[in-house]
Every structure is written in C-alpha cells, then in structure tokens.
Picture 1 (cartoon, rainbow, N blue to C red):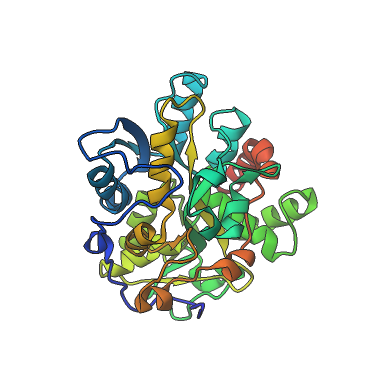
Picture 2: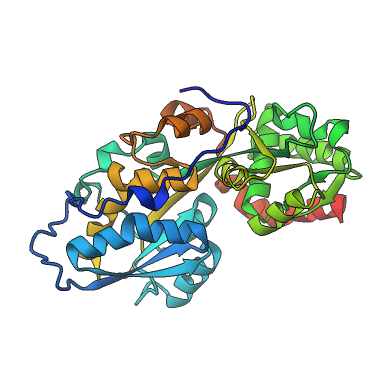
Length: 365
C-alpha cells in the first residue's frame, strides 16, 4: 500500500454503520449451545471516550445479541487498570479481559497480572499480524491478542506550517521554534518520540551513549517548546488554540482531528514511525475463561475489527480485514509497515524512566 507523508483529506468513519449484528462467532470456544437467553457475564475494559463507544458497538453489542453473554464494559485508562489488578493480587480480578498498551503490558506480565494465551482456543489466531503478535509476547510466550496499532509520528497545523515535516529531525527546524509541543517521557507518546529520536540518530535505548546523544539534541529545543501536554486532550487543545504548530502524536488521533474539520496534517517519519499497539489480555485469576475466549474470537475476527479499525483510524490486528479505499489511502498499516517501525524497548526504558524524566525536567522545567 502507499505510505503517505501527510494527511490532507478527511476519512469518513464508517464505525457503527458497519455493525455486523448477525455475524456468527466461529471461534475455538463453542457458543452454539447458548440461545441468547443468558450465558453468564464477563467484565472487559475499554479506553474512555469515542474509543470505548466504538468498541461497544463493534464488539460488545453483537456479541451479547448472539451469545446471550453479558459484557460489562469498564472505561478508563490502562495505568489505572494495572493498579487495580495489582491490588487484587491475582485473585478475584476486577476485570476478566483488559486492554493494555505495550508499556502497561510489560508491567502486567512482570507482576503476574495476566496469563498466557491459549492460541489453540482462538479460531482467528493464525490471521493475526505476526509482528503485532510478537510485540505481545514475552520470552516466547504469547500473552496478548492484537486489536489495533497506531503510528507515532508528527502532527502539525497545515494552516501555519509552510513546509510540512518529513522526519523526526524536522522538529528541530527553526521555523517551529516557539511553537513546539513536547510531551514528557512519562506520557507514552513522549517516550515513543524519544525512542524515535534515538533511532533516527542511529542508536537504541539500551545504549547509554545513544540516549545521551538524544538528550543533547533535546537541549536544542530548550527555548523552542511552548507546551508540555501530558495527555491526548492537552495535545488537542494546544494544537487547536495555536499554542503549538507541531507535536509528536498518533496517526489515528490526527486523522480524527482532521476529520472534525481541524487544519491538521500527519507525517510518517522517513526514518521510521514508532509503533503504538493495543492488545487484549486475559486477567490472572479469571473465573470466566470460556466466555472470555468466546469474546476474544469476536475481538480478533476481521469482520468485527473492520468497523472498529476504520472508526478509530488505526490498523487492525487481523491481516484479513478488507479496508475501504479511503482507509488504505490515508493510513499506513500492515506487516511490512510494522517491520519497519521503531518499537520502544521497554526492557531498557522501564528501569531508567525515572532518571530519564529527571534529565528531561532539567532541560525543560
């Protein structure tokens, strides 16, 4: 597929309009005996806002109608979910199935909060993108079922930027000085940008010298940063009110903003975008394994992932999705794309993150 440098035209979110109410869950768990009159319940997390609303219409509603299994959706953010699961100590977990990004996934595995997946119990396992499956794997054991992945790149104001950025390096261009928004490293897009910067300089996060070089580059932005957004809402605000003309952010978020009529463009950096994966994980201690796997079959199927992917503007985990021409034109996705990603090395980043954030603070605060 064509990998665009920027986004210019709106992508219409088909979202719930493509809801497949009558679809059959052809998964590894047998739901044929359930007649819709009630088959137990599970608790599943979803990110708050439009993401969670689309998750409900794409997966939860058709699943409940077909199987009779009640899905209790808990919205919020993955950091708080990990904290709640840790408090449960692997017994009577607050969720049966939890959405985690790559950062929180490693925390969950380290603390034994999620259990290995049984690929043989998932009819669509072989259809999932192998790169994304690998990113949800630890020491050869698969833990997560990939749902969507975004690309971390550069978002910019099309009405204020004369020459759109082409690579991470361009954030240092003097045309942006005084109009750069830079998220802290403790916000996942901030760490993804830092990882992309390190990689663009020819290094990786496990090399202290490469990390030092990246911090030296950041010093060049010391007098050029106008905002330090620490969540997605802040990023949207500083772009919308013109406090920032350029900021590291994700392609799906950028496309959604542009879809709303905002003058927003997105660049996939030439030296490599950074992967931003969300997968679903089975909580350690769940008492609803059969129903959880029945729902995972819905979650991993191409037919149900399509409306969700095209509504969120992120590539789906199933490689068999027949995306619309508009999606193919606007969004960069697929195995070949993911193989070219820079993926944050959380094994190197996590133990050093507090120290790195302190160094970041010394530059910018």
